[in-house]
Length: 109
Image (cartoon, rainbow, N blue to C red; front, top):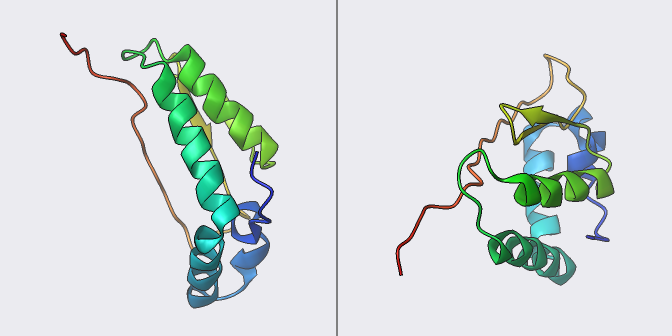
């Protein structure tokens, strides 16, 4: 679990301008604790590669991390997908959308 206080992830920085949000994001990303957390999550995800629509363990890792950060999410979405919303949901605030695949490719040894 990441102990870095990510104000931008929880929506408190959305009242300021985009430049402030960008600065806070980059400052958080520079923290050794943050990069250590990201490395641990990435390694956990890669420990068990799952094919498309079979990513039950991968989506569980993602859901647990979202919950630990206090980020609301919807699951399942198209079988194993996760949809999360970050911020105030106001149309006047900056909006950032991210889509990521979490399935592995079948590889023959």
